[in-house]
Length: 126
Image (cartoon, rainbow, N blue to C red; front, side, top):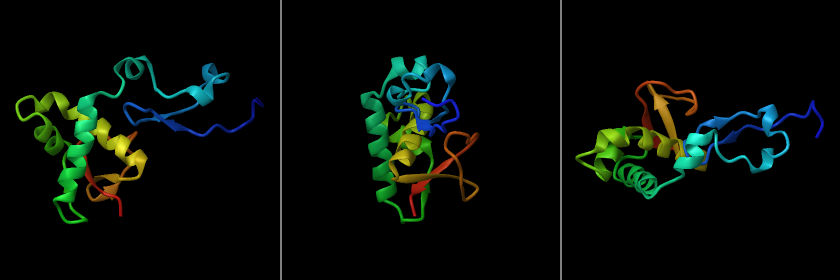
């Protein structure tokens, strides 16, 4: 592979964050699916699929331009232990962004899911 070749960024299959090409991945860039060891060992669990479904269900029940908070999905999946599901709910939202189903917004503006910090809202893609 030519050293000056441009490599497209990828998205982690677990956390939904952008994976930027690194020299250590030069030989197997096509097989890279995870941003790191933590995501590789965690994988996508059943609760992650339930969170994605909860996000979809909650958005379906609202007007097309309405938003939800990741905590809404976490509370739907586990009303008692929802706080522990906050980061998995954000991860589910980032995976749905990559799938083209939703957008992540802050202060009404679409933001990059890989770099968004602080409170976010989720809405159907317009």
